Image (cartoon, rainbow, N blue to C red; front, side, top):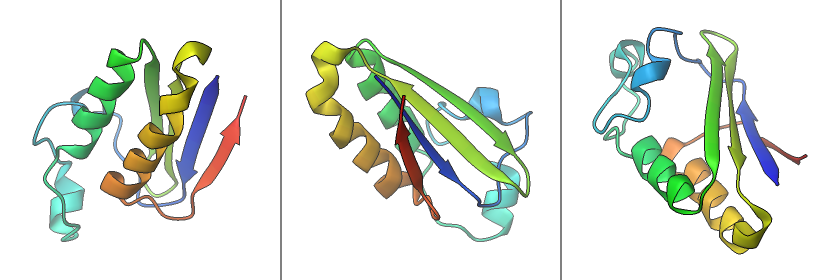
Length: 101
């Protein structure tokens, strides 16, 4: 099952996306805008998704927002809601839209 979380926030640059899952990684414009965070949320989510045999992909554009897709095999579906809740809580996404495919 696939779940997509999207927001209409500040977005991320294409150059930053490969570093998104690195621990303590923060995009420069985020720190300049004084958005708080440790840079650990997305690495934690990635590890949990990997442990469940799933995949996570990210699409983002500066000024337009971000879309994160998590695919977890059905046998692991019970953990899906916990991962998505963690993603929402630790990343602080606003204007969230959840949809299943």
